[in-house]
Length: 330
Image (cartoon, rainbow, N blue to C red; front, side, top):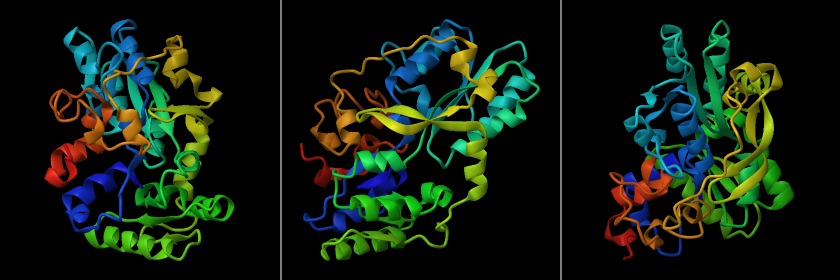
């Protein structure tokens, strides 16, 4: 299972799937932050925009992800202020220049992007009109939840550049979970897949760091410390997987003035996914995108029904853009 959405897209673009025998099945897992963010979060963001009058700052992928009733793009069409930014700090800069507006940055992602998200708090320390709506997640407990879905994980190199490799070794030793940390070039991906094929045949749990030029055993202590300063573990809901204990990150009580849920007293929202979409099953490896009845028909990148077709790292998006006849079984 290639956990990372970037791995999924790179493997397709490089044509690696086309040279693998049918005995090797690459399953796309829950490594796209936009894809695993539950629909409740989109509904919260829409409420902040339309009912609370906030200006939403966010990366572009989230704008078109469907909510229960509206996406942020549709909310914007109804008069909501939704600004696409290219860095979390862009949200802070916008708040500084528009102090008559209440600005919320949508903070999602894994260990790779969380440090830059929470550093906005440091930059916004003199502002009273900036906050974060958080849905940040961590990968270790997701590995645990998905451990029976594949023979081995293709671990995401950028995540483990932050958290190191200790968790991979613990999963191998305690739970018999195998995997290889991989980079993103053709040679790095092929090397990692070759290692998995060879090691699986030996019949013993294994872990190999095949990205040593970037990933070190200890990871990035500086990035880890930044996260620990501002955030603490919490239970988190993952689209398609459900609630995973201690797999999320929330702002500490000391920073509640920057927590949009507390600042705007948001109610608990239970969103409702479109029943035609099998995005959740795709994320946990239970089906392929072409098994979904709306894939490539009612659901396309121009008219997405599910998050996996919206995101630039989404599995459905990769299959649609690069899959070809070999992957489009229908």
